[in-house]
Every structure is written in structure tokens, then in C-alpha cells.
Length: 431
Image 1 (cartoon, rainbow, N blue to C red):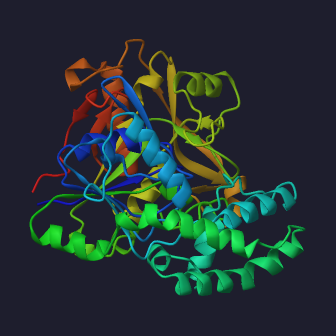
Image 2 (cartoon, one colour):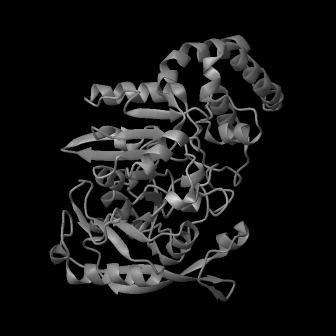
């Protein structure tokens, strides 16, 4: 059976939640492989809206196993609150339907405090635009070998030793930022209190997933954020703190790369970005305002207004390469309805030189000017279209030109937030 990785191929907010939900109906397991609760997925099912941050999108589908992998950093208090919220919406979540990898690092309150203090202390022009939820500091502790992981909650002596090791690092940092030292006893008490709520979900996820794979079960690997926020291949330093590209799906849950059969990149029909960092096609005019209003471009997690711009084929072609994307799901095509003229970035001008990719150096990225190709728009509505026959001719031409420029075919086309308003071109789960 085919296993599918879903990744955002821009700066996030591409509509992964709907597509993962659409695909999860045919999957047996949905596994989240990176990120934290700084990412938000909005699902609309039979008119009911679910807003998920830490939970895999598959939890709203009965009869599926949802997995939080070791590539995720997990805030246990946020997770339990999110579980309570979706339970109130009628979703059943039990240790049989949700598993958390035992080696998943935890986000602690001290991580959020450090995250926010650093951002406040940063000078103008050096702020990253972090959500302040402690994601970055939690990943730092993981790499620094001082994380408290889910398995550590099961033994008090181990937990205390892990806390003490972490505080040897954090207390000097806090002093430098003018923050009071960590209340060690309060932190240990909070972890001991949350432990009985988290531990029932703990499991050797790597083992479970390998067994599921050998049994012929279909696995859907779900990422957060977007490939342009990848710690290695994104617009550094304005990136997230984990690898977002498809290769992380294997290490983020403990399964071999040969388990990945299809990589689906989620791509918005225009471009948006939240927070700081370069954005060559950003629009600060009426067209940008119109895209934001029509697309309801506000962050699911933060509520922050997203920056909007024309579609950037250079960037998406780049992320298709770094993630090995087999096909894209083009979302929010309906937001472009009514534009007389549409623009697509086909190259950049950098100090008089034409480039067909975004350079690595941050100063060069900031100087890149988009080179546009114009296409006629369409006046007809594409909202809710479920077949090619429902699309205006110019909309089809736009999609086909996008395919040519990014050198990757469209596998799915989404025309509204409703899960069934989707045109299937290539089945990612096909054997």
C-alpha cells in the first residue's frame, strides 16, 4: 500500500489541514512528524470547524490511529487542553486512537518564557517573528541533550535529574535576560501532575508504525509549517526550528525513507507569509489587500494578519526539489476569482542579474526583485468546483502554467474550505 507525506511548499498556511483530512479518510494511520503547537490546521467537516494545533488532523476521523512522532516538540498542558476541546466537539480520543512517541521532547513553561524574552530583547530588524510558544528553545534543548522527554515522566528520579540538567543551562540564560531563576520545585510538581494524563498515550511509535507498514496499512505523514521555513532550506534566520521538508517524515517518526511512496506538496494559488523575513512578491497595494480579505488571511494559531503576494513559481520549484515532491495540491484557487490580470513570478533580478532561484544569503534575498509574467484572469466563480468542467478556461490555463513553471504536476485542486470541494487529478494513495 502507498504511504504519503504531506508538506507545505511555501511559508505555511497553505491549507494542509483540509487536504490531510481529505486524504485521511483513506489512510489507516496519520502521523505528525515535526513542529509544535505554533502551527494551526483548520478543518471544516459538515459545517463544523475544528482548529487543531498539536493534534494530528486525523483525530477527527473515527477508526484511525493518530500519532505524534518524536520529531515534534510537545507542550503537554496545551495538548490536554486541546484534547478536552475536541472531546467537547464530539471527537473520541483514547490511547487506542492517539499515540505519542516515548522519545518526544517536551515544551516546558520555561521555554515559552525564554522565547518571548529573547524576542522582546531583539533589536529592530533582528526579530524573528516567533509565536512565543517555546518551540525554538525546546528544540535547542533537544539538540543540547538536556530535554525532558515523554518517557522521563514515568520515573521521578529520572525526571528530577533531567530538570536539574536543564536548569544548569536555563538559569544563567535567564539571569542574562533579567528573568528570575526557574522555580525548580514548582516545575517538578507541574510535571508530576501532568504525567498521569500524558503517559497513557505514550508508545514506541517507531515499532508500531513499522508493524503497521508490514501489515499493509496506509500511513499518512503530516508536517507543519512550510518548506520555506525549514531550518536548513528556508529563508534563514526567519525560519522555524525544525526540518520541515519531506525527508524529516522518516526521522520524525522512526521509519525508513523507503516507506515513503508519494510526497504531496500543498501550494496556495498565491503566496502568503506570517512574521518577518524576505518576501519577493509581497503586495502592499489594493491587490494585496484584496487577496488578504478574500482569503481570510489570519493565522489559525496567532490571529496575526498574513502578508500577501502573487504566486512565486521560483520558490515553489525550489521546494518541490528539496522535498522531492511528486505532485502538488493547489489550494484557494477561488480567491483569484474576479482579478482582471494575474501575475506569476518567474525569476528574480538581483543587482541586474537574472536568477531562477532564491539565493541562500539573507542580504541577497532581501534585494531580489520579482520578474513577472502576466496572465488574464477570470470573472466566473471557481468556488466549490469539483471537476475540470466546472472551471473557467482562464483558470485552467493558470493552473497549467503553474505546473510548467514549477516543473511538477497538480495532483489535487482545492476550491473552498469544504473537504469535498476538491478536484482529484492523481491519487497519491494509488499503488
